[in-house]
Image (cartoon, rainbow, N blue to C red):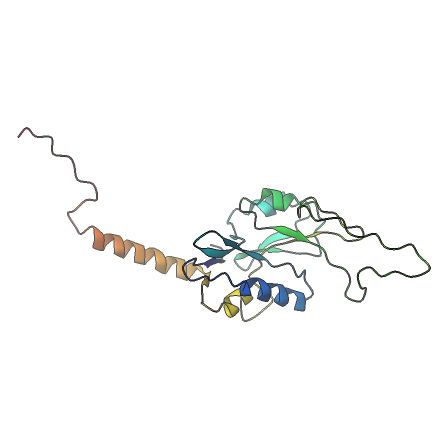
Length: 202
């Protein structure tokens, strides 16, 4: 099975530290700075949502340039191969793939000279799937479990409440065993969960 990251909404405090650390970690390695996870909130709870590292990986199946592959028990996206067709984002059933574009580091935004017309301002943002900024190529970004870091995902390291966990095959098997044991304790031998109704005449 693939490894993946999950978050416990009971422990999450919605501080966005995971998003900030994810952005910084990828930017330091020359990748898009867009966070690979988004903290979702409702009236009572909050929790980050990220790529589920699907076994069948619909995003990988529709990528026309094989930029999305399975490596080291996870689904990885090669930003250098991405052609910005946005099919992976459409195919993802969880909305875990977004698109981002950044200017070269040495070229500031709105760089104007007296020898050229002023650079056009970027249009108002509508959606990652619809936005088009002149001169920039949108690149797909998704959770890669920080595979380039020997210390593992940055979101797990920096979460102040330890709400985020990396699920591996061994951890999944242990969890399944615990569920079986709990079920045996709830329903001891000889006792079924559903009792047949008493239909005998009184």
